[in-house]
Length: 366
Image 1 (cartoon, rainbow, N blue to C red):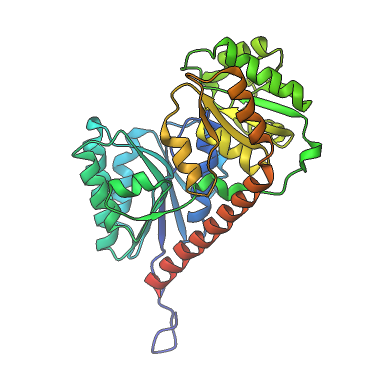
Image 2: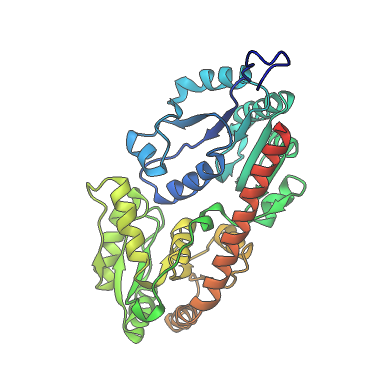
């Protein structure tokens, strides 16, 4: 800006945004929500500082981290992150990563550090943003510390009502993965039923296999198993053999190319069956009907989809007969129109929230 004397310029100190984007390159769902988190941070300051933990180079490409960002790698750089935060120019922005927040007993120290970061930014007149998150394994003192930090943040969003209640209330919002919703082929252009299950669960039983196979046959769909998390690859191979379907390996393909291949598959699917939340989110935003069909499902998927108005996509397979499972899956096949409407509404809501975040930052710096 021009000085009062009019013969020189006074330069203001550059603004700085910090964003945490950790995650394994072998998990496409993590990449989806971290990339959406980065989108909320881009353009909010002159300088962008990104913490990625121990992630490999391909992770930066997968998320689209700008070349001019300051990237801090490995846990050894945490001290530098904290120093840059403490010495940042006035009114910095701190954006925490979206996703699941484990608050078990071993996380008390980590939550204390996050609370300290929040306090530092607030004392410097800055803005703290917590995109939609879900709490897992709550225990004290971790939950108490997390709740204090959330209440000190100008923006604290929760992807399910249960998580909001644990911290004493807050705004329930769609999982940030729904921000990537796009146009997709009509149902008549879709000819596959896709399955992607956790490798850590037991292999589904004979009635489950029969229900999925018969549902696909009745709908004229080809069965394909895919891998969205690298550790699930052996299970996908087993399922393809049991179902008589095609197996889509991850193999040596890098994460960027594999994600493109996977999204293309979801765009050809009418139904996607999984017990991984972001398999079903990706399926839904690419136009397929999502279905969770496993024994003893957790509330995680049910609650997060309910937050965007999508209900009844889960069936506990523990005591269900093959006919019950077929009826459930057939019902899901007919819900693509309703699910598409809710997905579009979720994307619009996330667009509104992003604009609110940017306006909050702008007003703080006005």
